Length: 157
Image (cartoon, rainbow, N blue to C red; front, side, top):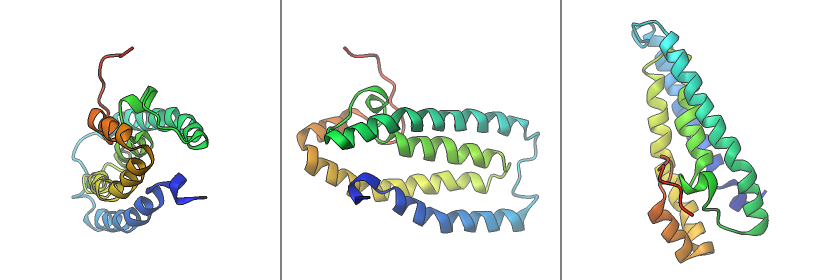
């Protein structure tokens, strides 16, 4: 598959893996200090909510993304009107922290922040490619829509 279709996802996964292993080792050696001193049921509930958010973001964006690639078009409607990168948003803000909530570890909860920092570094190359392909239209879209944190605005006609 062409790099254009994969975006920076493989790089993000590649650089995140050693960080996750490091935090996992720290969590293991610092147990029980690394765990929250309260009933984990609250974290399970938060985890379910976050995972649900991530799944909704991910699966609501994939069909539009595939169609846009086939047609070489810029998507700015639907979920893409709220966030420029809903696939990454669903994973970094939803699925990863949601799963980590089930581990009841404050050390592991630092991992999504590291993922976000890596995202901000790596996304620059992908967005340069999008600017080359779509020009001023993408720049305008960038100015109106957040990269990863959804910006819920009133419905526009």
